[in-house]
Image (cartoon, rainbow, N blue to C red; front, side, top):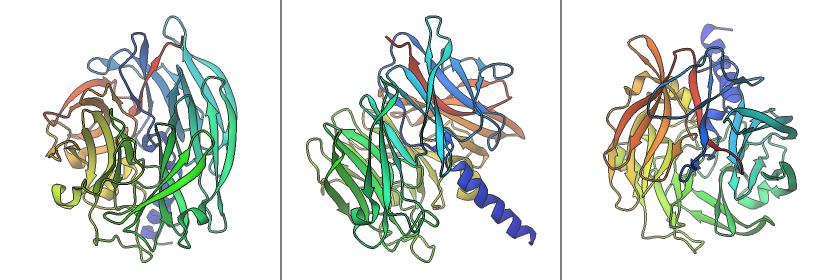
Length: 424
């Protein structure tokens, strides 16, 4: 092979292996007031692109140095995803098409992280907390696959308590497959966004300017309806959650426009934008739409983090890509710029105080921490003056500013942030 072909092949391998790492896992943040007793659980690895996951703890995200040398609990690989529910940290190993292990950790009275149990489950490509459950989807991936599997893992019993199948072809009903990207609990229902694709091999679609949300009765997972819209494109992407629920129960969906058409190009017919389903309803509010393409000057949203009080932190790149992984933003996306959008008043502001866009090599993506007070914490790994710096930044929605807080000792890149309380 020529050198360029070798690079492309290696990059594709990196995409498929890294696409399932915890940096870009769907929403599992602890978006609630921090309990009195507990610690921040931070994962890191030796470099932004390789190495085993190691789990650390910290008492603060605002100050201090995280010592990563000779500390922490090492995992047996880097492709892990994490969820905190009912006082336990669930560490999901991505097993490609095979089953993967799930290790469960909790805190003892001295706030030391200890392993409590483990079990096996099918690997997933979309998951989130739904009350006391962790609901996971194993999407129909290959062209010949028709059924997506779902599993309910009860966080109290730490067992799979229910499972079922969804006909991915019948759900979208247009000759393609429904590929779930995000799931949120909305009252007594589950809203699950999906993209319409030919298969998970290319993520291309004949319908790049349509978006879909399946609404299920929970916990039965009985389909009630599919909400469709054509004002923007697909919601989210592979391992990219793009929906959220605010304090009033309003559901927001981000049309990210990251699904290419059948030729591999990205449609410009519709803009990237934010849609809203009001609390207590199951249809889009047609009077609400925020045009992110116009507001940002043509940037694409590669990640969103809800900070509370209507503020969303956006990680934006000048290029579209069907694998919008945050550690590839600098390489493929042209650098990461942060912005704040307020869904209450429609305002859009670029963030000041963050590292330079082209210096950012990795962020914690969907893994962040907020008390829903209008601020939040995201880990950023950047190359500043030929020095690698991994630190947690506090983002303030009202002022659209970022301030550096906890840093590592320079030996690891922070990849996830969670808050873990001491279980009752």
